[in-house]
Image (tube, rainbow over all chains, first blue to last red; front, side):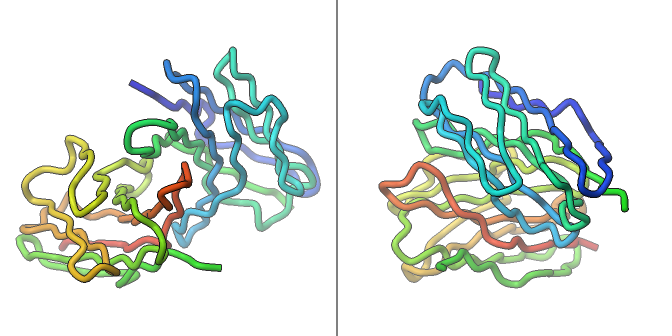
Length: 115
Length: 113
């Protein structure tokens, strides 16, 4: 069975600094997607960034980038120039490109941004 | 941009009552999902639905739960006799037939008292 592990329950970063959130996963599939979702206090799920497993190039979206290490099954999120609005829960998620394409989520990392 | 819409945003119900959570998926999407997030915990898969049938369900999705697409646009989750532990955020998601990932609604917060 696929699993997603986020080992950092909480992280803090100074405004304008860079922070990296860790995620590891386990799967026997070769084709899948990985995601980072942001969940603010409103509890809405906001897609931050996604990575296709077949792509070697790491995805980037403005201040957000990932470090995808397929062999190590690692998928970390780097937030550059952190802003107060980045404070939220961040969930790593896996989606196998087979079956029902359901998401499997990690337990989340709460990010605090310090002014 | 099209989005998945869920109603209501917050529902309070008495234990033992039936609740129906509603979702309007994106119009050309064919695959539909419900997820649950108990406060402070991770998001968990409940059920996937395609072609008017359940295609997969988790162990959480017991006989108290049911889903249907009554009119071709709405996608509903019914909980027959709510328990205190059903209190959670419920997310609907939908996916196009040719896409490999879904889009989430904004969630419905269910509080059972």
